[in-house]
Length: 243
Ligand code: MN
Image (cartoon, rainbow, N blue to C red; front, side, top):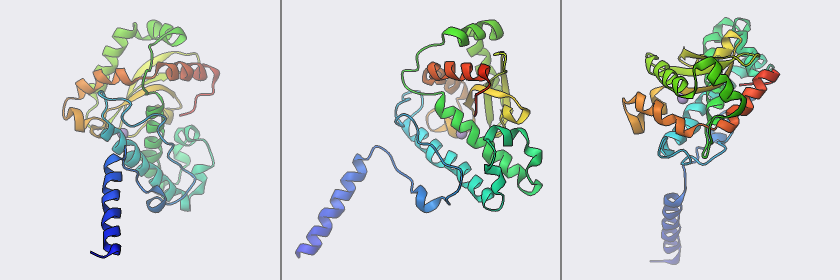
């Protein structure tokens, strides 16, 4: 064997070892996604941080492929309709009738999906603590206490037929309500704000839970970041809560 082919083999073996040791697959966003005004924020925690409740592979596919697909779609719409990126996402979603009819359903789905998933990654995390302070007081007042709230929220999520989301909305007085939406719709489309929400599309849980959505809904509470939810609650009352 000449030294060139030996070197080639060595490099190949090193490449295999590196790939095996890599903590996650990185999708080539630069090569595949058109550039544009919409960007996918990286997760604030490792993809395996929510295990065993949500597995790393599900997080990786969900964030890097499903959420990225919404971003790619939005950037494609923005090529000919740059105005969809001129206003904050909550404003565009609250005024979908202002979006040109030819792209309205597409923008509804992909901007709704972008908003929903941006919120979803934020309100989860490792070591998420527990409900306390103002947000716990609001849960007691409006939703019958933490245990009843979680039972009712899980039941509402279980009743979503097909794909959709279960949310807690919050108004500017801090009042809470459980609401569901189909597809990638979001309460911001009705001028409301979301405190938290869970994704009940099968892609959110199928690898680990298959058809057992109820088990996923129950386990999901172990991934919730109550510190962030407390901050979102304060922002909602201050009128500064975004997606
Ligand atoms: Mn999803």
